[in-house]
Image 1 (tube, helix red, strand yellow):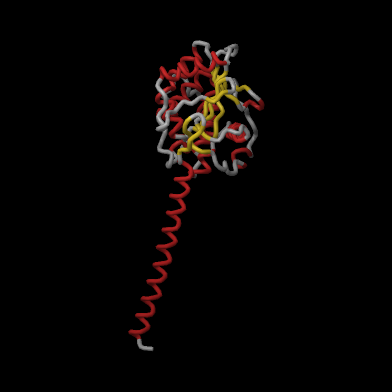
Image 2 (cartoon, helix red, strand yellow):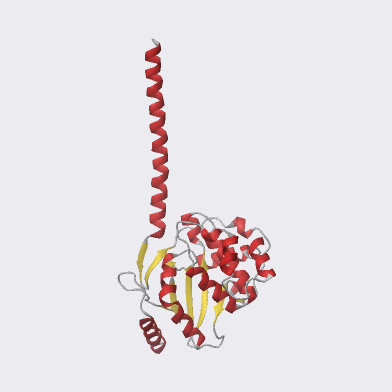
Length: 264
């Protein structure tokens, strides 16, 4: 075989190798696209639209440390966060994930009204927080944000609620993992007056409440809720989105709550 033929054969081999590498890269991209689409797909539910829950993955790393439950928790194993008057005649359960863009949309539209009805004693809010988007989209932002929210809760329920609102007001694109950076979370905590105590900062940096966050997430997984956000008032799921996936207006939300409590 001539040197020219050897060079041509080598060139052909290299071209085949390059083609295989390109196909492998393309396959990886396709897998990421399929994963992203399957995880951020909006599904129709009785209560409107929500990000569908899928496998939450393995949280054993987060759960491996000592369990420290924040102050001001409620429910079994301290996995429920209650905001509002304890003797409120009605209970609104909110199921959400800090990385969920549909949750952010609802918070942006109706968050103030949802809080107002808790503040005036119409109902108390029970937050049930998930972290399934970490497994769906990759990263650890949901878990890390929830652990930081636990540190805020330890400072007070009002501090938790303010931090909760700041997280949604500054939510990164769900395909990124902005909440996975504790320094970013601490920067956002600076928007809540009086939250960044030494104890809070240390708890966020050390991941003190990561095992608790894992328990909260498992409690969500066991709830049977199939998507976020889901709102349940006195056992009745609220339809807080229209047919186009747009959150109801503040007035519509108030009317829906009044209708639901009156029917109860």
